Image (cartoon, rainbow, N blue to C red; front, side, top):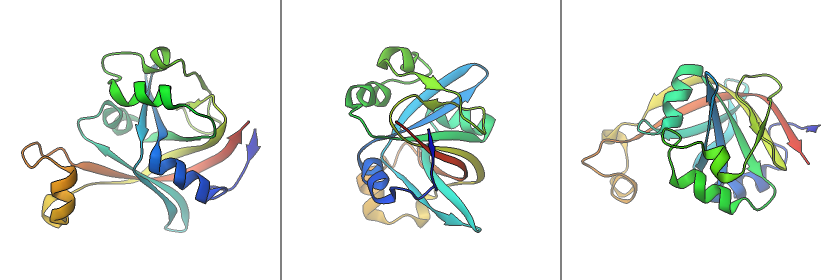
Length: 168
């Protein structure tokens, strides 16, 4: 394990995020993994942050609401089969770790584990959350990404990155 700054390999990690990264949540013995291709890496309030965008209907949303933490994995190996499973099923219905063949290891500073895969890992604690509002959203984005009837908009979770490292 190599401790690195949160912005180490930023270009590579953002390229991975634009395709598929993994976000892991944990609460009361239940670990859930979701895929994410939307998010942000930056600095707010003089802190390194990751901004996760999660719909209220997602199981991961309910876990983050309870624990206020999550981990992010930018895989440096091909995990496309695992991503397909983790992106297709809900953790409410199945154990996605078991079905995908992924495993976890303990995080260093928070309770939520990280995926035990080669790549960059972020341990994050939520410092601010804000639901999207339809009235402030560009109509072209609304039409492309949101069903006007469902009202299932994302919540932005701004999380301080409390640890960052690479697993070989």
